[in-house]
Amino acid sequence: MPDSTPSIAILIEQLSAPDAEARASAAEALCRAGESAMSAATALVAACADDHDGVREWAAAALEDLGAPPPEQIADLTAFAAAKHPLVAYWAVTLLGRGGEGASSAVPALEACLAPGTAIEVRQRACWALGKIGPAAASARAALTAAASDADPRLSRLAGEALAGLPG
Image (cartoon, rainbow, N blue to C red; front, top):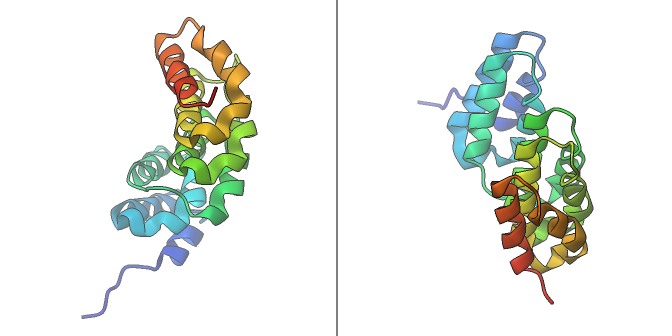
């Protein structure tokens, strides 16, 4: 019996459908696809800004199960890291961190995420991501040092851990 599940490419297209239920259904199908939906990573991050609760929830659930992003998506994810929508920025930063050293081109964008005024969960995740990138994140040392002295204990701890992985 042939598989009747739409292809990942079709599901990505459906994330932009005018009908919210169709978008939510596509996000749910991508969630159920697991790691095979990796090519949908940037589309799922964008869907985190959807007006429909179901779309946002399924998109975030799908992103939970994705591993490191494909190298060709690093630039788009880097752009999403600066999004005003905190859920979009959070997931973009998370995927960049999962990219490890392969996401080193995103270091300036991740450093910008550490700025006061940025949502605390995005700042925390940016510290984590810079730590995952490792020595290639050395240019963010000053921003990480400032974050390490922040009043938020989790931000301070994550910045300290990232600093510990930097050379020198």
